Image 1 (cartoon, helix red, strand yellow):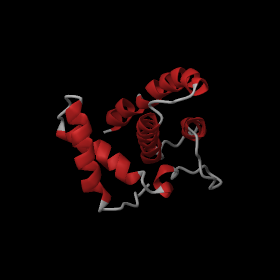
Image 2 (spheres, one colour; image 1 turned 60 degrees about the vertical axis):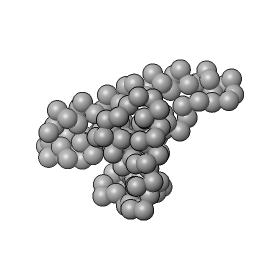
Image 3 (spheres, rainbow, N blue to C red; image 1 turned 90 degrees about the vertical axis):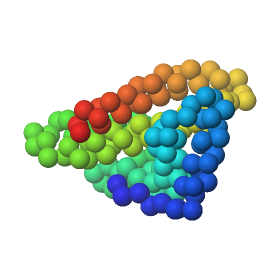
Image 4 (cartoon, helix red, strand yellow; image 1 turned 120 degrees about the vertical axis):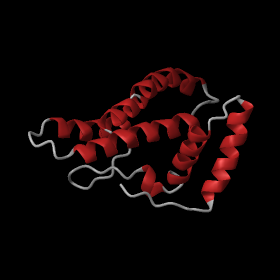
Length: 135
């Protein structure tokens, strides 16, 4: 997964993220830069939905991404380690991105779904420690 980026957006997102995180008392430069990277990267749709299955179908749900990831666990040849890391990272970044977009919802129906989504998000963000264990 080679990200297509829009370089002009990164300074914008860094400044915006620094401001927002600063208001929350978070001043960690690495976190600000990573969140800005995710925002910049996912500003292009082809990066948001870059994971494809073995037939080339674009995967646009976390469930489909986990199913694709699971297909690698059943292979005897574990030469797909890089692909697994790529999918784990994408799941974590995708979840981070989506939880930021859908953090608050104005309708009661979405508020009910929010609890389930946040539980799922917690599981998906668990992808990051898995990626780190590969390194």
